[in-house]
Image (tube, rainbow, N blue to C red):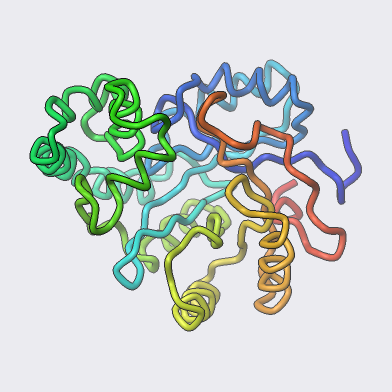
Length: 282
């Protein structure tokens, strides 16, 4: 086991239960191979992989923390809140997530209609082939279909040309409120963390309002070291953590060996001067 300050904790990744391509068991094996000491599976709006992940981690002697990534609508944008250390069987969060997932199927059909007008037929069925479950279908599944069809070179290009605001295939969805998401996480005994803050298309004022409101309602953490942050952003969000008194989290946001820029457990360590989120439950 690593010392506390340099613990190899990866507290953000996705399995086939949401929009990843590996099973919870395969992710556990990958985490073990990459020297992860503390792991969390954080599928989007879904807890169905938690027992499998926990059992796989236990069999490999990896410490495990239950997790989820909740989709939230804030200031007209989608942001993500990670819940760590939750009771995955808590009825409040289970039912809240079920309601949040409910709109994905209808939204996906509208996305497919837009893509058809842009000359890409069969997108709903194609995306469903990657998702398997209409309740969990997401933009990532559409992106994989568009790559398979040769419409784009990779999923990154898909998100530049399609599926984002003012591009074909973008359909907004009203997700959970920030207040609801944090309340569900807290009621389930967990810690709420703002995921990859560097990714949001919000003004500095809007981000400040987000941090202040999040703290006010009981949010405790922010991802500092994460797969989509640059080294410069590690510093920026480390300072944000200090300014607001947030616990600092670390997670690759790993989805797939070919798509993800950062592999499980291979991120830089958190800076020593920040308080790790795992100090709460490890």
